[in-house]
Structures are given as C-alpha cells and as structure tokens.
Length: 239
Ligand code: 6GU
Image 1 (tube, protein in one colour):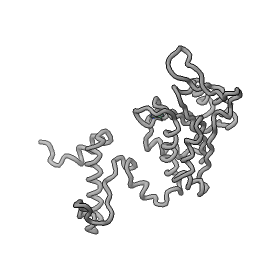
Image 2: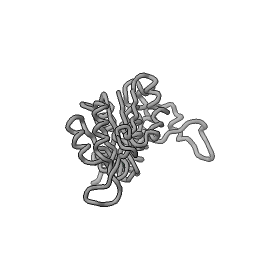
Image 3: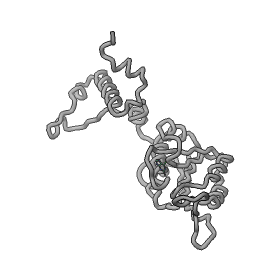
Image 4: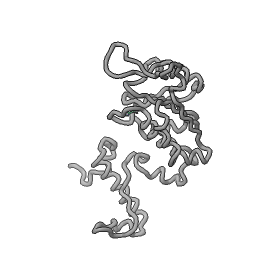
C-alpha cells in the first residue's frame, strides 16, 4: 500500500515513522510520502489560504496548490481521503474497506476547510471519501489522518504478528472487548476473576462473551442489535 499526505504541517506527520506504520515500512508492506502543500505555491509568502467568498470568519484553503499537487502526485484512480467533521463516520468496517486499496491520499485541511471545488475535482479522477472521526472539532486533518492510518495499516495482511488478536479485540466482533488481567492474581485488594485461572476454556470463553455483552450494553447500547439484547440478555422470558 502507498500512502500520501498533503498538509501545511508536515512535521505533524513525523509520528508516522514511529510505532506501527514505521514497522510496516520496514517490512516493505507500506510506502509513506508526506508532502508540504506549500511546495505548490509560487508567491513569496507561499500562500495557501484566502478569505471566504460570501464573508464570514476564518480562511479557506485555496484550490490551486491542491490542483498542482494532485497532478504531480498523479492521484488518478487512487482513493482520496479528506478528514473533516462533515464526513462519513470512521468505523472499523470503513477501516477494513480502506485497507483493501492500493493507494490512499490524505488531504489535510486546516482553517475553515478546503475550497469545495478541490473535492469536486478530485471526485472526477479518484475515489473521494470524506471521513469524520467523531462529533467534535479538531483544528486540522493531520491528527485524524494519523488515527485513520493506524487503524488501516494494522489490518494489512502480514502486518500484525498475531492474527487472532485482530479478531478478538473491540469492534471486530461488534462488541466492546472484555476486561483483561495478568499476574499477580491479587493486587491492592483487587482479585483476578477466578474463572480465568480455572483452566476451563469453555467457561473462560463464556465469561468473556458475557462481560463483552455487559460492557457493551452499559457503555454502548447503540452497538447492540435489538435481537442480541433479546436473545442474550433476557434471562427470564417475559410472560
Ligand atoms: Cl476527520 N477532521 C477534523 N478536522 N476535525 C474532526 C474530524 C476530522 N473528526 C472529528 N473532528
């Protein structure tokens, strides 16, 4: 997979070289290219923004530097990801879908956003996905692009050492993950649930599933289909 980032804060993306994506580069699974949008400006001040037509607060990222960058980077046929609070919610299924692509190009906006014509133009030559991390506002797309990158890259075949840990974790099953424990068996008056030390693998799996369901019902009832609630939660059938 090849990943490109267009940003006016390239240093923000230095973290890509650390941790998981860095390891994927070392393994030859991933190519990372971070580009400074100001490379494609021509004035002395390397201007990337201007005031919004129609008035209002803030600045809008100009179309021309993006246009030249998209041409030079030959984004045709790629999947262009635009982090924006106005986008489609980023979820594990979307991460899995993006992980199937050969090339992702992240356009990181700042200020009040990117001139809409950049997005309209991209849609004519690439697959365009506007994506939101959640219902809150970040100052720019860089942190969101980092988060999406980590979620996508860890799904690349051959990237995670232990494929089972991918399947077992939160959201892959549709449930939040059950709590986990390690040694010692007792710590500051808190004990490890005895079932986990019983050696009974069936009982352990049942306990974990039950704890995952309880946690999900408590914290994220929106993740539970009504059927799961009915079939697994109702201990005494209603009469
Ligand atoms: Cl993906 N980008 C920005 N700039 N702000 C956000 C976001 C993304 N998701 C939530 N807030």
